[in-house]
Length: 294
Ligand code: ATR
Image 1 (cartoon, rainbow, N blue to C red):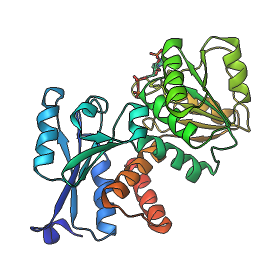
Image 2 (image 1 turned 90 degrees about the vertical axis):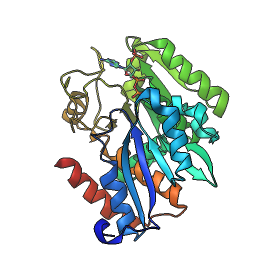
Image 3 (image 1 turned 180 degrees about the horizontal axis):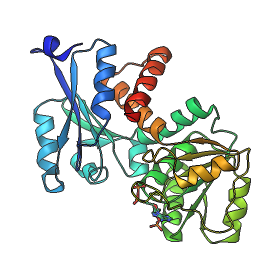
């Protein structure tokens, strides 16, 4: 749907709230989906400073928007401002998608499933029979660990610089999902052994994020093996020092672009209450990757 000719009195609104928000690639992705599906909806970025979050949420409710994405730094703070949140978002402790359900704002989290969808689609590995190691214990680690537990991973181990944060995630997932997660401090020799035996390894730390591209979360004694599939949820730079090391060892490597794409597609499906078929998703995926390379 070409905006200048097709937006009209019936056009509905979706968007993203964040601070900063100018860097977001979501409008390109979401507007392309609406266009491909021939839907009369627009997706716009809204800059919302932390002190304006409550006003913004009430405003979006008053404007009867169909839904919106939530990005940094609002993903956890928004929870108390919504009418309801999904069980999964509660376990993850973060909302990245809000849907207006007959005037009630309901919070969901598609980041987590965005990651496992990326894993299944891009690496063609599943979750069920795999031993998973997650490096880091922030919000992204918690989301990915919860989703892996829900999808029945064979084992999950969190390795983090600060042990207590890893223990906290294991505790929450143990209580909410009755799934036992192991955790270790990075320097524990057992952590290095479990790392060696893992099938899938995911870096969720910010180590290596641009502009600090030479940093890696791995310390001495960590090594990859060729049978391992290795993810970094960072996509800027496209290949972190962590991924380069894995590639040199012969592993299959993937960055965070897939997660970014799939979480957006899942949010869109949630707002619209319809699925996007595989062929359309593949075309959207291709054009998103091309956009990201620009
Ligand atoms: P997010 O919510 O995006 O996951 P976060 O909550 O800031 O981000 O979490 C960042 C994670 O990266 C933390 O687990 C952090 O380790 P600590 O728990 O010890 O703080 C980890 N991290 C950040 N920089 C790191 C580095 N240089 N080496 C190892 N771990 C690092």
